[in-house]
Length: 251
Image: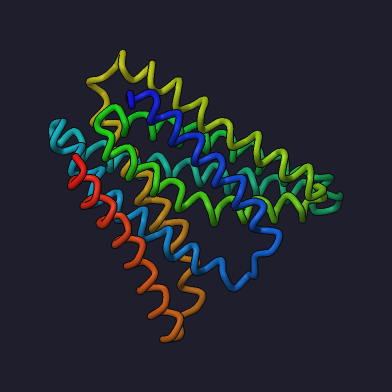
């Protein structure tokens, strides 16, 4: 299969799983979400440190790649600060008025942009190698599942019907395919920038895992929860390592 074929297949698969996650949210127990989050953390960190970063170092100048990872983490920090500021600003404006679904709209817009960027990251990985592309796609899907579940619940809480929330989630997931196809053609023109982009891919995975997901696990500091979280994070890392080994065996 060509690189474009893999990109389209991975983007479509990610979209389907995203929609299934939204449907799964209808019957999901709240107690299951930390399990999904813990596994996603392991998958993200495993993909970043076992596959993406080594690949970036092999195909680019190590200092440039390291700078792209560091710069990427700083950029994601600033973007999140901007989103938090915007959320706080909107919350102040709406303190005496009804939301009227506004928070749901912001969720849809933000999720669409996020999915589009995920598509570009998937394209960058597949243009390097099929193995890297598959592992990157798996890691992205792993963290999308708990996120999509949360977003779907926010839409319902914002006043959307189950049907409308499901349709919006499905349309938003199409942005991954758009980003993947555009990334495939655009990144071939600027192929020399691929190692830098891989550094940003790694920065995205590390930042989401460490800054966004791990703090939520600290809300349950008891020993039993900590052991469970650690095992699930290890399972996520192990799945990436196993996938990497199997793909190397098939290569």
